[in-house]
Amino acid sequence: MALYRVKIFSLFERFWHWSQMLLIVVLLITGFGLHGFHGIFSFEQAVTLHTSAALALLVLWIFSVFWLFTTRTWRHFIPTVSGMWGVLRYYSFGIFKGERHPYRKAYWRKHNPLQALAYLMLKIVLFPAIWISGLAYLFYFAWRDLPRATEWLTGIAMVHTAAAFLILAFVFIHVYMLTTGHSFRDHLMPMISGFDEVDLSPEEEAYLRKDQPGDIR
Ligand code: HEM
Image 1 (cartoon, rainbow, N blue to C red):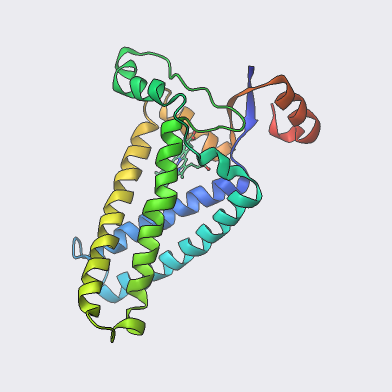
Image 2: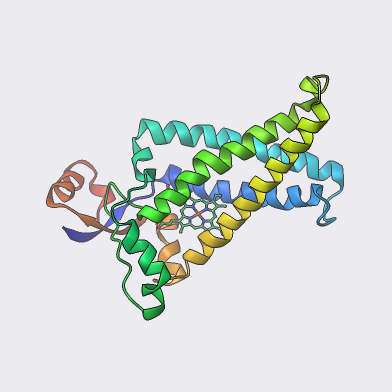
């Protein structure tokens, strides 16, 4: 294995990541406005912005799920037990002693086991929780005559708000993690340029040089 600069985030992934970030910021700000935490927007403005950003994010999410499955990149998000202890140990002790991060990015494994677990939970627990509760809220007019509809709505609102707080916590931890180990810039650049240092096997290097020469430097 040897280190090369390899394209690990395609243009679509970078577009998806940054537009998702922008839409989530709009959703958090307008959502907290609707909740009464601030008065930057009128209630009507906040509802319109929140609903439009949510629908745009839903479309983006459908495209990204399609993309993950058609390109088989979903495999990056399957966490493994192997290597998890080393990463947990690093974040608990090693990081404070200036040790080197135990994980090296591989071509078919760009996330360390902890990252893969965190991103997977975001994608299969938090995002579905916020979508399902949000859509149930949006279409309340269609089911409001059902028995105990108002009680259900209260529960749905709680799930929606709890998921929003957990996504906000993810964003804080996510950005904080980018400041650990290497510099913030070093962590950030791959999501801008697409390229990062990756350990390649001789077969992977030969494959990239022949079939995707633009993806290896
Ligand atoms: C200021 C805000 C943000 C910054 C600076 C940022 C930065 C980054 C960077 C640099 C990476 C690549 C990490 C790596 O080397 O593997 C990354 C990956 C990722 N980020 Fe963010 N991010 C932000 C907000 C968000 C938000 C709001 C979400 C969703 C709630 C998010 C979800 C993800 C996911 C799922 C990945 C993995 C992408 C993949 O491998 O395909 N990020 N982010």
